[in-house]
Image (cartoon, rainbow, N blue to C red; front, top):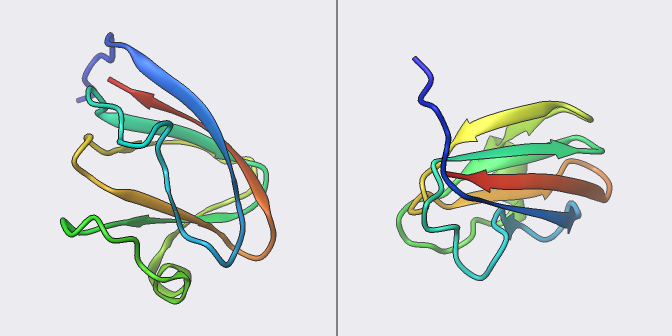
Length: 102
């Protein structure tokens, strides 16, 4: 059952490539009230859920084990503010629009 999202949110955008892994967040830290992230990318990207170390995985790890999100796919993923979520473009530069929602 889906939980109603009625809290504040932070919307942002990232330009990602296939070399540098970035954390999917608007500010220096994930939005404190975040429970989900909704996103859409103009190219295929890979999503990777990090561990509790807070250290970004390498591009090789994300390319091998990341979850594909296809070009123009609109998705919502569950991710509280303690869950690190990383993103990497599959093969080219991608523009990603996202919102951290509470």
